[in-house]
Length: 389
Image (cartoon, rainbow, N blue to C red):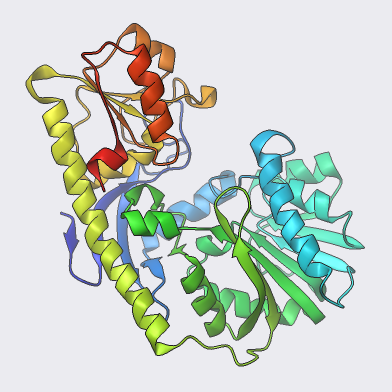
């Protein structure tokens, strides 16, 4: 059973989401669901997933066969915009330093695209990536990428820049991990990090942001507090211009940095509130789904990626629920452990459900307006914001 006290939320089973799949089960013998225990670090207020040996084993296997959940950069499309926004931050921050651009190390470099772009900014570049996509990128972009986990004996020496894009949230002890990188920095070098900005999810009690791959859930205040524990100075930090991330440039030395007791207490209050509100939101969603599927009525869920955790946590029955998404890459796929095939908007219009619940807060209002014009008047269209204030 799912249990919770004021400090810890123990979720019996959370879907082990490793992207949408061709069948309702994860490939390669990976589990469809695993326990998930959410709490927070009392020193910083950072929301964290408690260590679990079963989760660690599954994640190691997923990374080795090429999990790309944390990677959102690519050579074209939206992935290119992610890369260029972070590169712009790195370039602007470097221009304010005297370190020069001698060498760069990217840890968790994924497909190698970002590394290939940085190779033109620095005299030399090297990446580390456990999955096979790194070796594909090494061949495609002509950049050296070590296959394995960091640290590795194949990466030695000092670097004028170390880059972690969508990596730190995957590390169990982010403060210790970042502190360990100081020995790889050349004098005056910088560490550049990008992590998902969880602020809106935390404020809304949104459980869709919880993944087994993520051990930490940062907002700007807890990122700063964590870097203080690492004895590093944040030379510059900001919210990304694109993609909902937090960026920071770090240098060695505390330089008087500290987190006040008042800020730490506020961070803890925010974390405790999330634990309570997120659990309550799952109960609310279950009750709403029960109402909308009562007496044989059908429910369509738009943007189901934002819904699968609530199904697992609150054990919402899948009967009479259909999934819809406008992403053509998702059509015909499934999320692990949930036997609901993702359909298109055209499928919904041809065979409307009695109700539609749109799970996106960002696009929900506009999408609701569009669907209300296209669907029969008898179909009730709601957004997640209508249910969870």
